[in-house]
Amino acid sequence: MYVPKHFEETDPAVLHRLIESQPLGAWVTTATGGLEVNHLPFLFDPQRGPHGTLLGHVARANPAWQALSTAAECVVIFQGPQAYISPSWYPSKQAHGKVVPTWNYAVVHAHGVARAIEDPVWLLDLVGRLSERHEAGQRVPWKVSDAPRDYIDGLLNAIVGIEIPVSRLIGKWKVSQNRPAADRLGVAAGLRSQGNDPMAQLVGRDAASILPPE
Image (cartoon, rainbow, N blue to C red; front, side, top):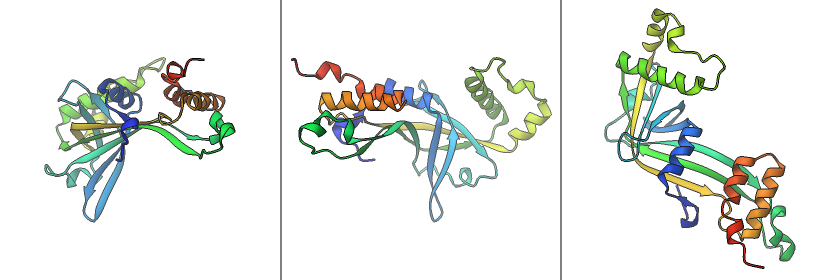
């Protein structure tokens, strides 16, 4: 991924927060004849390994896990807030007109070598943790133990676990850092008018503090 220095995000805590808040990752692996892409909800364990570990599962019928190689790196893409940016939001448009549209986004690429796990005990723990994580906001959270055990065992036989120790995390926060502070504030206001508060917060971060004194 091309990452100009002013768009680079290297703070592990910031990268981890995006992964944890947007857990559906696009998992890109190599396959015979090209690339294979699957979309999986991942658990992220920041304490396992120097850059954390991603945990997920695929259907046993999915050929992606069978093609895994200990020599081939894969990447998981986590997409954060994104938005079209209109040049009409820039105060500089009125000053000189030398502005064009762009697109803002925050994204994390997690690289590593994946391995497949078929251990039913490991898989049961994983689906339990996934359910606990995503059921937390429900009034009556569903638990794996709510379903008959023989039914769960049958489903576990139909999936394969995926574990990816992360070797490197690359973050790109393209949030108008290359624009003057007044333009950034204009972009933040435009985004809020469209209800995109997550991107507005990223764009507006520190913009007020770098405005020149009056």
